Amino acid sequence: MTGSAAERFDQALTTSPADLDGPELLPSRLARACAAALDVDGAGLSLHVGLLRTPIGASDPQTAHAERLQFTVGDGPCLRAQDNGTAIAFSLEDIARNWPELWASLLDETTYRGVLSVPLPPPMGPLVVLDLYVRDPARLTSLDRDDLQDVARVTTHELAVTVTGPEFPDDGSSWMEGPDAQRRASVWQAMGLVGVVRGLDATDAIATMRASAIAAGRVVDDVAEDILAGRLVPADLRAAPDRDGDHG
Image (cartoon, rainbow, N blue to C red; front, side):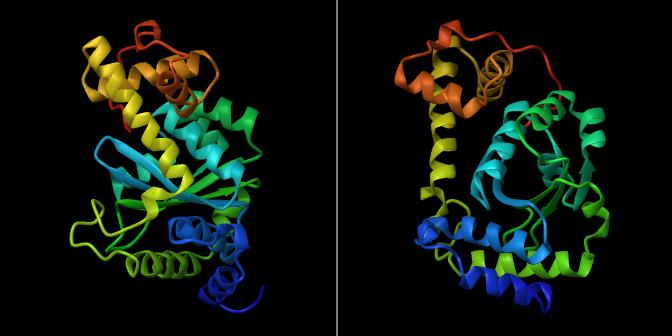
């Protein structure tokens, strides 16, 4: 593609595949357009509200899985960027130093070796974060920052015009009906069950689910599905270790 980053974004958005039609899949179309406009290997969008982190769209299945790995660890570049409200780039070496469990899972289960996490500008940001994944960490430093800002701006605009309710993110959007968001909603349901059965608050309940997922080499989303299906009993979950600064 040629032209400005915003033009490349628009071109990719207008040529989205038919299987991404529908308002609930808008964030997936936008993530795909972000990846194409910035020439990165994957892009994902996630919504952060308090303890809850919900993926709303990804450019491809591997990127969706990379988000689930980060969520399972409970910390990582995207969460750090949302906390700080600034764009942060991490190579795999940075991730290894800060989050060794995330490093191991990304290395084993994806081809990605670096990630740039960018909180969108208002009105969507900083609640909505854009993650950009690359196979070559050098691509993180070669990204044009003006292009990055342009893509973040047009992504925010495309999301904002679909919000019709007065209380974003509680209403006014169909994003939460997408498949990635619905899968994460199962985690919140399972978290409630674990909390009731084991007498835990939300933070400790999700930490318990994460500990069980990591011990089994799985993602939290899969553990949640097993709990809701009755294949896994909350009382049998591995106890969570004490941790400071746990995120959702």
